Image 1: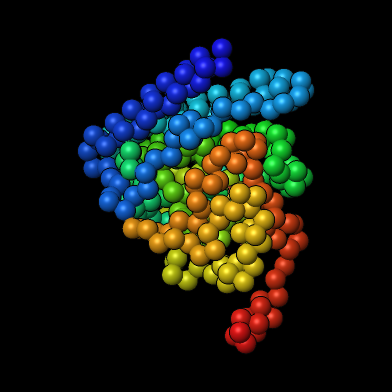
Image 2 (image 1 turned 60 degrees about the horizontal axis):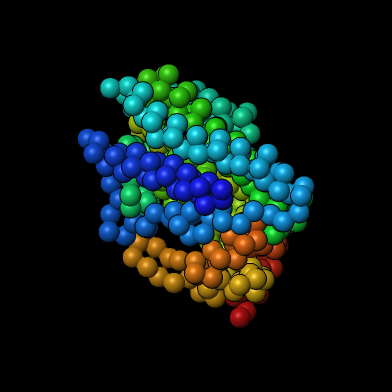
Length: 324
Ligand code: SF4
Ligand code: SF4
């Protein structure tokens, strides 16, 4: 029965990959390049092989987690198939009022942060393509109490609920933009098509930390990310050279708690350089632990920025750094 179920999931994933791959045939799309990351297929990396122990958790696994994941996957199909509804000649300029409306659209539906940046080819996963370079990046907060339990089945349930909800916000926003005459393509939170932490950093929402996740001043790493790519080319794109969050990374470089607390020691002391970027996590160590332990999330839990009210005295921090 379990083997049959995993086979079914794998065939759904394969179908999705085919649809994503077909975007590369569309005229005028932005293609990945030689520095793009290979696509991460969580099923072939051991995802879904383990269900929780205990009668109550098993019931929640079947009754809550699987339907939530099914809805997220439905969101992936919607994200990919709905691009067919894009206008043939999409508008490219939006009024300032409409741009404000886009932000409010996301915030009123549950996003906690919205930013704007331009996509670069190396941030597109190598199996797909993106229709527009103009990115609206969305973040949604994850529940602090549930993160504090990590690694725990309740944490995993909450994470998947956020994946589903944020995916719906991104898909709804894409529909909203199409209705107003703009082109749009969503990259949803679960199994996205682009490297979202870097996109969010470029949108000045935070900085990528030593755990490989986006760290924000207000929510730490306790967020999930999604994006909507659009034909609107006059969005207020962030000046990423002057990211006001750079100090977060300076703190991070001093800290290293996540590196020390990662149970299978999967975080590199110093990120590994690779063409087009850096790698923070040794996936060969992270994935097995992640899949055996309800999606882990220890590196989110232990990060001091993830605790509400965490404040850094920046002047004192820089004094320590300068005296080193
Ligand atoms: S998810 Fe867990 S195993 Fe993976 S890097 Fe974070 S703490 Fe380590
Ligand atoms: S735990 Fe420390 S080193 Fe790790 S991401 Fe958070 S601030 Fe950075």
